[in-house]
Length: 215
Image 1: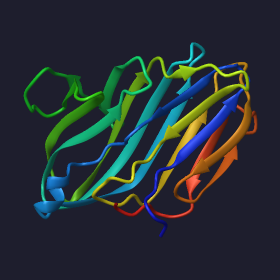
Image 2: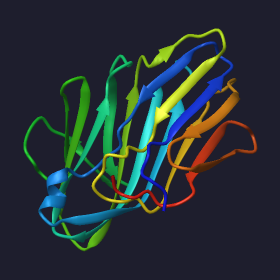
Image 3: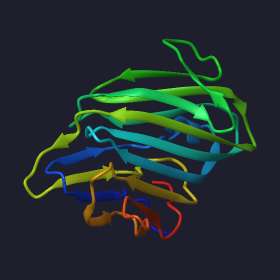
Image 4: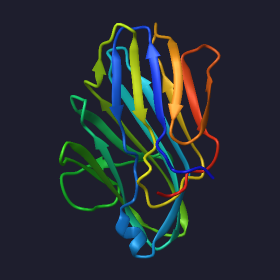
């Protein structure tokens, strides 16, 4: 088992601009652990699709096994530094349930967003859940996270945060290029990971070499 350090992805593209931002992935709040609640991620997969206009479409798919206690909500914090904002937030369960955005309340199958101290917070609610697994898909679009350099575009993405209360068994991060772009340099930092490029060269997938333990 490797230490739960962040995965950092750096990708240079032949487009003369730099994309650099950070992301904290969903983690159930600390009080859950203090109350004797436990869970682990069976899978945590992230897709980063670079759009032709330089926006980034992020999709996080998380399959969580709830092992002790009853849970009713999930939680995400996404830094807004070095961006011009995040919108088009959506939350669903791949089995077919689409969550509706709400301004207040804790009704099941709803989610709320708020900006606090230069971070976007997303909280979503689901029926009381215990001793089972649920899969959540959180998606959003990041704007204005691009800086231009003569050497080419750069994507630096902190894909899996090390400040979490529970472990991740399996995870992956996939970067997808827009038409006309190509990878120049590919690397990662943090927890040990391998990567492979698709046959057509339009995407690369990073895989940790082992589970990611809790912080």
